[in-house]
Image (cartoon, rainbow over all chains, first blue to last red):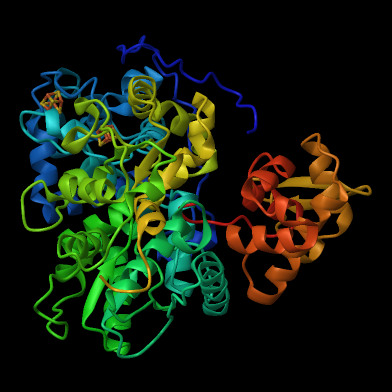
Length: 498
Length: 112
Ligand code: SF4
Ligand code: SF4
């Protein structure tokens, strides 16, 4: 691991409130999108001349479109309940990373231009003019929010900072100040079909390699079909599943499960990405454009079901918005929910005894589970409330003998973000990512010490990459993170049916 | 902003993260100069990785997945070296990103 040029927080006995460090993170800013990255999404290539006007007009437009935004901007009573709930505040101590302070960066401008009191007596109501220093703060601190929504859980009015951050980023894009990481990636999805920019031929080659590997490992011909017309299931994984570790071990797990269950399936080179970064930049048209690729692939390949792989925000977009964005899906088999999560499929097969797992295969490790924020607080799995917490844990417990949950304040709906969500998983934000991971690392250290936990399982591509990167900063091995379907992959009995 | 890497008295343009802007600017000296800036001397094993990345990119217009890379290196240098761990020993900033940079390829993007 490379030596950091910042101080890595110390893991204490329990999570202490941080020492306040005003403006400690004021310098944290991701690289700006280039003219080309902006153009590919139809955004201005650089800060437009009359940017103040354009920004206010955009804010006005958003207030009209999303009633919730106005409610959130009006509703805060400064009760303080959210202040210590954000991992970025806990990790950095910068008071502007308190959720209410983050909201105020936009709220103050909203008050100035959209409320009578703010227009007449700005000082009295904390209203301020939109100027260069405000713009600077927006770019910095709205890229220090992973849109994880933990704060909103503790707010008596349910004020959602994630929505405010997304709106702010949309305003920034509209005036020509985009973020390189998100916007470059969205351009690649439009042009090639996935975040990586992995073309069809490379995908085919990668999948052929995986077939070889699984055959060598197990002696079984498990297929990784691509663009197969008439398959039952169209599987949409995050593209990191093709590329990175431990993601690919999860992909191997999905393939083994579908193989053993006798479900015909296919991947699509046109829609080879579950992620939808348009959510992070708050842009509905972009989000729809990305989602429509899934619809087109499902129609072209004449599949009956759509199944999403292990990707947190993808599941939120799919679960909550896919039908509105790209529906109706009346051409799919109505006996199955549209869409389904791969964990739901595996869980159902285990419950019905249609696949068999050998827990001893994972006896060399002790596992805990990281609930991904978008799965935990913005979606569901299965047919019972809280299924998004129960199903993955039941799948893990069916795959291994040693499982221990982390502190209840850090899991389930109270889960802490991995520190890299919301479009922040980029090297130019490394300090923020390392510091934001503090609460999760703390909880992991605790189960390591109390129960000998060796591995943290995740169901999100971003969480997996983020942990791989930040674990070593806290003294854990980088490969202490595993995919949930990697555990399944290790344990599944291939071959003869029961 | 324009940053550059100096190779044999010539400044070649790189982006804000140090990746070569023009793929055609690359030569072995570029890889060496970038490594030197990181305090690294490239051994023949480093070059096996870099050359494989370039060949793969040439064919597929993208860097290989980590498994494709470890398998290829295992075949070239022996199975004990065909591991992510070994690649991180060679390229401590991460084989995908650091080795791609030395190879003159664009930075891989996405959730990786
Ligand atoms: S949404 Fe998450 S990252 Fe953003 S302010 Fe709230 S707790 Fe922090
Ligand atoms: S918890 Fe809600 S009302 Fe209280 S300060 Fe935070 S945002 Fe405002």
